[in-house]
Structure formats: C-alpha cells, structure tokens
Length: 423
Image (cartoon, rainbow, N blue to C red):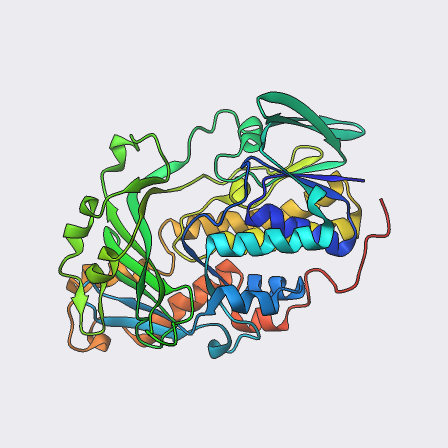
C-alpha cells in the first residue's frame, strides 16, 4: 500500500505530511535536484492555516511568516475603497499568514524529513507519465538522464501548472492560458505600512500594485521584507512570446509606469527600486477539466486547478487538497474509490473558483471604481455603498472556502489521532 506523489512543492509536501499523520506509506518524486527556498511572497488563508496547525506546524509558522491583520483595496490615487480585518482580527479561530513561498516550502520539507525520514523523497526525478493497471499504477520518471519506473497503489500528480500527468490526461489542452497581464514580482526591505501587517491592492484591472510584509520588522531599523507585485496589461492576442515563465527582469521594464504612485501612506516606486532581483511572470490559468481522475491516478494543486492569483488561493487550495485526499483514504482505503470521492468534492468547488477569479475575484471592485470615477472621489458613498462592497467580499470568501462562520464551525478534515485501518 504505497501512494506515489509526483511533485515536491507545497502540494506534494502537504500531502506527504498528511499521509504520514494517518499512517499511509508514500514516496515523493521531485524534479529539482536540490530543495531551495525559491519564489516570493504568498498568502495562506485561515482554512489552510487551520490544516497546517493540525499538522503540528503552529509554532514553526510564526517563525517564518507574518499574521496578516488587514486587507485593503485602494484606487490608483491611493484612496481607500475597502479595508477589512483578516485572520484572528476578523473573527477566525486561525490567522492568515503572509510568508515567503520558499520559506514555507522548506518548512514543510524539513518537517517531513524529520518525521518520515530522508528516504521518503527522491530528488532529481521528473515525472513523465503513468500507466494504470488492475493491481497498481506505474509512474514513469527521468532521473540523471535515465528512464525509470516505480509502481504504487495510487498516483497523485502534484507536479504544477505544467504537469506531465495532466498533459497525458488531456493531450489536446495546450499551454496555460494567458489573460494579457504580466506580473513583476520582487522583495525589498522597507517599513510596513498602515497596521504594520497590512496587505494592499492598488489600481485597476490593467495596472496595479499588490504589497505586504512577509517578515516581522527588524527591532532596530523597523524594516521588514516587503513583498510586492507590479502588474500591467498587454494585448493577449499576441500571445506570450518569451521562452521563460519566470525570468529575471529589469526595473526599467515596468517601473516608469508607476513613478507617480507615491501616496501620503507609502512610496511604492522607492520600495521597488530597493529590490535586488525582479522576476517576470505572465498571469495564466487553465480551463477546468471535466475529470481529474483516471483509475488509480488523480491531480491536485496547480496540476488540477491552476487559477489566477487574485484571491491568494494557490497554496491554500493545495493544502486543502492534501487534507481531503487524506480523509478520502481514511474513509475508502488507498484505492481509486478514494480518488473519485476526493474529486467529487473538490473539482466542482475549484471550477467555480477558477471561473470567479477570471472576472469576479475580490479585486473586481478596483476596476469598478476606475470605471465609475477614474479612481477619484471625495465621498466613497457617493460612488458605491459599503453594503455592496461588504457583500462582494463575503461572497468571494464563500466561493473560496473561508467564510468565517462556516470555517469556524466546520469539523476537522482529518480527525486527530486517526490512522488508516483498511486497504
């Protein structure tokens, strides 16, 4: 009874920790030859933080991330449209965390090695494809230039937006879909704004900035590591013509268009100019698939439901996937029935989230304000009511699975101290 996991990112590592918790043998195959803290800042929503806490990571999370206090949207002129408390300040039993993706990944990785042993993961092994059989599944890998096959009871594809397993399931799908937006992402040392743990979205659909701290301030300088994203929109009909999906870029590629974005509460151009490196990404997602599961093989995380990063859901939904798979194994055993049950619960919800993020995500109010008043107003209520803004915010939380009341009252996905009892 072995679960094969293709991919050792946040999704695969969270699944490994979950399977170790419930006593299911597993092995992870990760294409990178060395685990490194790559990436920039992400947010982990309270529904996923709850699961990390239940994996025993509460103290460790507080050392690598920041408990987000406030979420706010502002016009391109820096005027406040909507702010709300987040995490425990909003009434959740668990915080929201802003954290460096690489730091979270390494936390999960080292925790997994400590608990399950170094031989639970094979590095430098790239997933190529799979074959289902009556008595197991065969995962095809490339490692050190050599092709190899491993056999397990089920295979979980956690190999990201460019998943080879998904490509085999949907060979005519093509590359991820670019919506015309390009993101430049970086981190810089700077003093946090507003509450000191605030997340801000500024601008509108074709030009915006997102920023928040991902470390606590230095007690001597008051500076924290600030994560920031600058976004511009281009004509998507021309396609994404660059070879790299995450290439190092220059400030001159985008910063001149943000020089005027200096407000009495923050100077964003000055923050960006302090970055040592900047990386460029196209904003992409994938159309929802009609099926994730083929026999003894299923998809999770970005391999299953890559969506636009407009609601801070990528890492959170991957962690939820891991816990739902674990619960399905407890209920059905390690078999295709468990995979079908997991898909039946998660795929419809993720399809709705993908579709919502394409036009009705939490940031949709930014463009609404741009359309109504070009981002300038003296009295917000003359443009839009607080009730309308609150309704939009609560509707999105429900779609994304972190409505306050529902989450606080929900039972644990994976019951504590429960191990699998049947195969």
